[in-house]
Length: 134
Image (cartoon, rainbow, N blue to C red; front, side):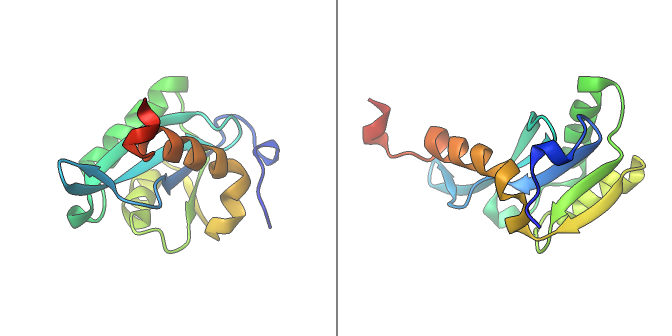
């Protein structure tokens, strides 16, 4: 079932995702970008960039991102949606559970209407070719 922001209440449900499909290269090193966002407003609380050799963000990085999300509203969401087979899903799920959030796993394609615009914007802003920067 395709999920839509209208299916949610602001700050009730957060989503943890990997934003980029292609690697982000910084001085020839490949990176991935992970984000935590609100499902209803599509507001992005922040990003974690990690080298692909590290595979997933650290517990400390995810904890810091959750603290940043909490500080936006001074309250925790009730649930966290994580795409199935998301490599960083475990570390995000553990942090969510520590903060009392129910973890829900969904098919990544069910999130397309919510995360699609973020992924597209990210692709255009961060992964475009240098000739388009002019």
